[in-house]
Image 1 (cartoon, rainbow, N blue to C red):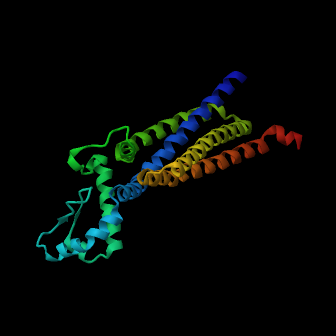
Image 2: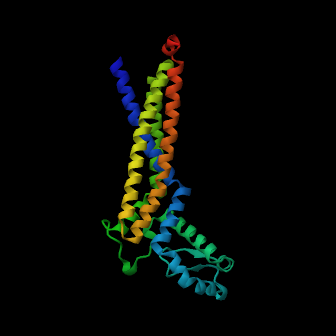
Image 3: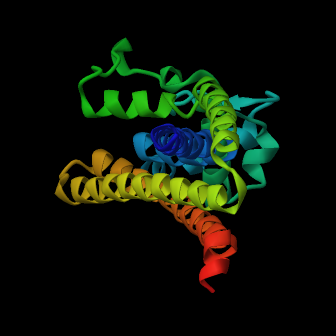
Length: 252
């Protein structure tokens, strides 16, 4: 009986740890956060500020003179469209925000393959830009749906294990300890990953790589925050179960 309870606790800890990993990645890849990250990524890879410094006056002039209902930016790396009114009514900063928002929507739907390539050449998978674009493709809808489905499956497995484990207040305490242990392990992993990204960014001399590592650091705060919340919740369960258990009442 004791051995089976220990096995249940170990399985529950592993399940909750995996659930935290999948759920945190699912929250990062959800449409809103994903498009914000993709917009910033597009700004880095296209050097959007340099592009607008050189091209924005000509884009405004073209919008004033054209009879077309929509304009494209043929020399911008992501295929995006605007109406002449959108361009005419926006200042540089407003157009920059709109440009990155449209680019993010294209990248979210079509992936990093939407980038126009000079000479038709794709960056190698082992190159820094190839790795960056592969990471960007993880922010698309399909990976998000897979992570959500995995989170649901792990949550259901965890619920079954918790029901088997919890028997009275002592079981509630054991559940709390399992949640806390899983959250501590997850939090340690998230903090180590964040520190690794920080050290890699500090050591990188390449502008694009440095900017993306910095962006990854900022995205890494979400798992750390979620790990802390779950750890506090698990500790509260453990404390409540220990305080309300019959043994603690007898000792009192």
